Image 1 (cartoon, helix red, strand yellow):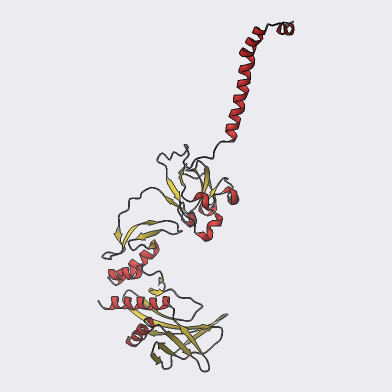
Image 2 (cartoon, one colour):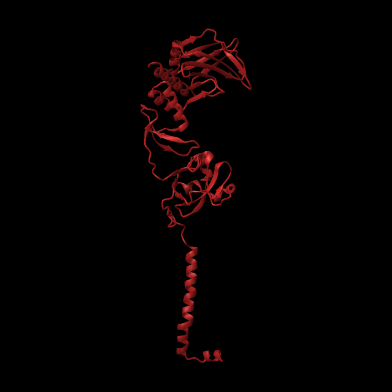
Length: 358
């Protein structure tokens, strides 16, 4: 019998059998166990995976998320194509994402939804493949809230914001739902605003007008297409009393005016004003205030910016204490100008000088 013959082997034969059969088998088992331990103890992927091969495809980088939004992470990136699940562990945290690079695996989306939403597969420089959600209504790949910027160097020919202006457009800006450009002043401005400013400068054939207007974040340019009137005016709060200069023009005429508005919870039936600017005091005669109300009330008057109101506006814009008092029959209300309101008065007075000094 086979078993009998094994037991009858000599000591030398048994050693040969151990060396040729059992020892190799034991080494094979140990090697297998060692491989398993090495797999379980493998380090995390390096910051630059061997799988990261852009090969000419569109690359991007993840930029820092504003601190107040950091808790949401880079939620345009997702591990699943089910977009409603793109949060928490299925996206990239602010700490893990900042500084990563990536590239689009496909130039066409693998899924599209309503309103311009599209999903693209991407590869990140940490070796992780994910899905990127692009929303055309918010600016597309590099639009609002994506917090990515392209890595390619764009060929951009610089040009002035208006022919003869000193401010130059030097490149495109990203992270906005609307097309924006970088200026030589370090500011960013929308293409829509640039077009509107160029329109004003063209109307008055003055490149300095473009340089002046583009330097203010507060300026609003609006056209009433029915009346054919364009208005240039600083931003103001509709639910606050105000003293504001504005420009209005048509193809043939232009005029500057001052609008004074009282806004409050109670009627005062304003009929005149007092201006106090440091040591200067002036009280107007009767003014034709108009009135309206909804939940609150507002009373306003619109007067030409003549030489007298230019002088008043200059005093208000350069005073440490600048107050307009709205007088009613029995009550009054005070408006103290803020630094921002004073700066806007200065800007509009400069605009008047530029336009009317020609």
